[in-house]
Length: 218
Ligand SMILES: Nc1nc2c(ncn2[C@@H]2O[C@H](COP(=O)(O)OP(=O)(O)OP(=O)(O)O)[C@@H](O)[C@H]2O)c(=O)[nH]1
Ligand SMILES: [Mg+2]
Image (cartoon, rainbow, N blue to C red; front, top):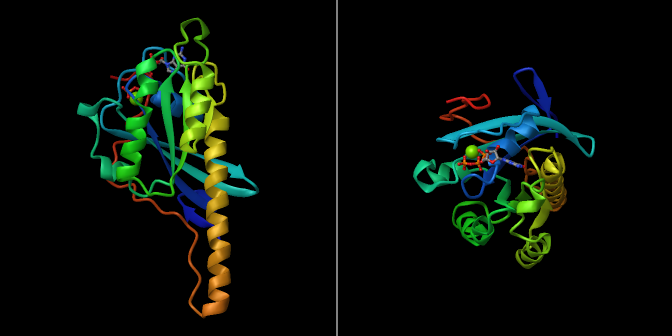
């Protein structure tokens, strides 16, 4: 399948990824670290929905990751169905210094089950791994839960830029593998059933989105 052209950028695939998790776990800083290599110690709670993109190479393909971010706090959250629509990956973040944010992971998984595609690829991230002296969730607890729920898992630090790229790269590679397998299956089906093959481009509707940016902006 050929490349798509959007603006000046060429890419083979566009994948929408959503950030979820309790308020204050570091979702917006993970996003700014990954897309702009920025970190902000005094960031404010997100209001509404923001997104940012980064294009990278996955197994020789140009993949544009479009990452959506919203507030963890219920009252600030954008309408959930629109947020999850078209998402092929999710980064479910908790804070290793706040047990409650880990206990709430199950709630976020339920929300994904209710609103997102059932094949969505999920990475759980235990963020703020730099705050070792304040640790309230052992890494092993994260690992165990991830295995139980069939999720990928990494501890990350947006502050130290630790495992942030790896977390996204892992999700994007996994999505790419699923998509390319599907494309292959579709090709095989087309060869045997005379039906036209299925496309492989993942499109997301990016209208009605607030794209406010900037560290520590009010
Ligand atoms: N030490 C440390 N602090 C972090 C890290 N990531 C984020 N923070 C801090 O945690 C606070 C909350 O970070 P945000 O990125 O705004 O959290 P959020 O999940 O987007 O919060 P909501 O938008 O309210 O849902 C800020 O003060 C950040 O500086 C990290 O890896 N290490
Ligand atoms: Mg935020």
